[in-house]
Structures are given as C-alpha cells and as structure tokens.
Length: 420
RNA sequence: GUGGGAUUAGCUCAGUUGGUUAGAGCGCUUGUUUGUGGCACAAGAGGUCAUGGGUUCGACUCCCAUAUCCCACCCCA
Image (cartoon, rainbow, N blue to C red):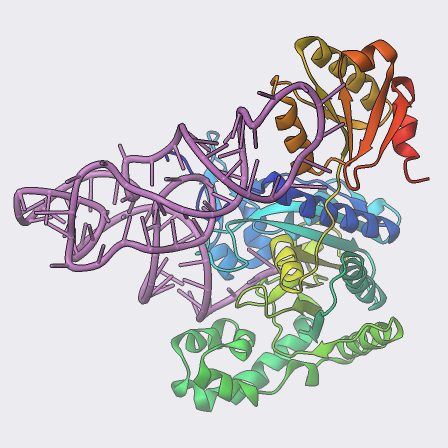
C-alpha cells in the first residue's frame, strides 16, 4: 500500500458516519433551542492569535501547534481549539454591538501535534459553544445544561460533571503566594516539572500525576477556599443554579484547565472510557480574553466537547445510535430495456420523496435479490416486461415478505401508507 | 519528547527448531437452469507476509534500522 492517512488522522467511513450526523444534528438542534446561532470560522489563523489567547507557556502552544509559514511569509497555525478564533471573529465583526448576550455554537476540526493514544488524535472534532456579554453565573449554568440536554438526547446515561473555580487575576495572585508558601518546604521532594511549575504556574502543581507530588498536593490549600468575595459569590451562584436545574455535580479542585484564558468557573465532564485523561468535554469562563484580543472588555464563557471522545463514551455505555435508511425501494430489473424503465420510474419516485436504488450492472435476478436483502432496503419491486405492459406490479415488504399489487403510478403513496 | 506492545487477504487472525506453489473465518463476485432475498452448497477474485538492509544454501520465521498502529507518561477535546 502506497498511501495511508497521516498519523493521528482518521477516515470516517459511511458505515460510521451516520453516528456523526446524528450527534451533529442533535447538538445543533439543542443549541438552537437555547438561542445559540452557528458560526463557522476559518481552519487557520495567524499564529499570534493563539500565543495571545491560549497562552505562550501552555503545552498546547509550546509543543502541539501545527505552525508553518505561508508563501507570503506569514506565520500560520492550524487552530488547536475553537475559542480563540471565535473570539477573534467576535471582535473583528463588532459583535459587541449585537443584543447581549451573543450566543454562538460551532462544529469544527482542530489540530494538535501530539503522540496519539486512546481518545486523542492530531486532527479531532469539537462541538463547542461560546457566550459573550453575560457576567453572572446563570449563563455558566446555561451552557452546562446544554451539555446535559445533549447527553440526554443522545441517550447517554452516566455522566459526571466536575466544577471548580480558579478565581480572577486578583484572588489568584493572592492564592499563588499562599500556594508557594505551602509547597516551598516540600519542593526538594517533588518532580522536576513541579519544581519548574513552582515559579511559572504553581496552580498546575495541584493536579500533578506523580505519586509523591500528588501526596503533597492532596493537602495543599485549595483555591476555592481563598476566592475573593466576588468570585466566591459567582461560584455559589453557579452551584445554586445547577441545583435548581437538578444537575448534579462534584467540586473538583484539581480542575485547572491548561489554557491560560480561563477565569472563575471551569468544568469538565469526565469518564473512564475515553482514555487516560478522561475528559469528554471541558470549558469555562474567560472574562479577560476579549479585551486581550483587542476588543472592549467583555465577559465570556464556553466549552468544547471532543466528538471522538463523546462517541467513544456512547459506545462504552453500549448506546446504539439508530441508523437511518434513506432508500425505501429497490427496483429489480431483468433486461436492458427494463433497466431503463426502472431508471425512469426511480427518477420520478425520488422527486416524490421516495429514495430508490436499482441495479445498473445487469446482474442476475438472484444477485439483485441478495443485494436488496443485504442492504436492508425495506421495499422491493420487480420491474419486468409484464409490469411495464400492465402498469401494475407487486410491491413487497422485505421484512415479512408480504406483497400487494399496486399501480406503478400509485407507488409513492402506497409505500408511504404501507403500515396504515 | 520518553517508554511498552504490535504489523501476514478488504476485516479478524493462524503459520509449527528458518525448508518447495502462504492458510482459515468473515466479507466480496459468480453460480446452484425459466421472475422473489437473508440460510445452505460450490467456484472465483484478492497478499512483492509494513518498508529497507543484514545473517543464511534458503527468511513470513533470526538481527538492525525506518515507517505505521495500539497503549501509557506529560498535557489537553
């Protein structure tokens, strides 16, 4: 074999693509019910956008971006996530003058140069939502409820919501001091990563997976205990709002989120079935991001759900997504002449909304029957010389083999009313 | 970037201390006589055994390198 798809990319074949379509349409429909409008943004942006928004010290930026120079000498990056591009678009298109809040959703591919493992790809799909202009915790609860509604619609049973607050720049600065005071005496026992995190971003030391670090971090002061009054009120408001909606959650102070733009609310839906990381979707508030990108200060919040991880979870929970059968009728034909008549008949039926397939390879009648049986097409009609002459044919329901004599001109309505 | 396992037909896999023309199941195509399927039976197509070197009289089998896939660490969706 000469060519294969690139590392970390995947073909989504017809036998699987219906699952994607179901998930995409359910997500779009639910977002629509909430008043979120779809936005489609470019696949690549200027590199600097991601340095500024995602943060130039994050792993995503430092080692995972697909960055290249185009023929005009510009530094271009394939988007590693959706929020940055949406925020850029929000600012560039002056959406702050739209009625607030501005509610957007999207369905994109994103790219991260990583070593792959379960639930992790270099090109992956995200369903996401962003809401701009609403400051209070109600909108936080709203976007979380979108996910809950989506999971319910798709039949997903067990989902675990974890929430946390990582505060605002003011309380986080204060907390960082406290955290460093706590870790300082233990620093020599901790891993190299944590030692360098100590100066750069002590917050990340909390969710270190190293056993020795984890033991030390377990007793570390938690940011939610040191939130400023405003942030505390916001978090309490979110909890109350979730409870009012009947959405159960856990507080997980280990959720830090690896992108720099997050403030206050952060959350994840987790599972053990989607790879070691366990995150099906993650999101949070980014109240400083719009101004960082050059817009008027505007609060924002959003999430991204990994479509591959979502589908992995569906499969792990044994939830089948129904396949839809667009072709209703198979027309078997017995000769070159009847094949043309079958094509004419099918052409007309499709205009009436009945999907049809016919044999075009001149295969034996038996082979055509086998094909019709295997494809699961629910109705069959044999078009031979007799049927053409009489204008009548037997319409057969493949499931139970029952047949009814029908005038060819009445086929569409006969199929529609078969079970009536 | 670090580490472990794998790579033989479209798919899932056999392949015996290295020994002639490389196998099975599923799938696919065709057929089992005249126009009714899923089953059964039969036949057929499809492989430079991931790629490149090496050892050997001889390599799918042993050695090395590369690529790809799977999994874990880091981190994220």
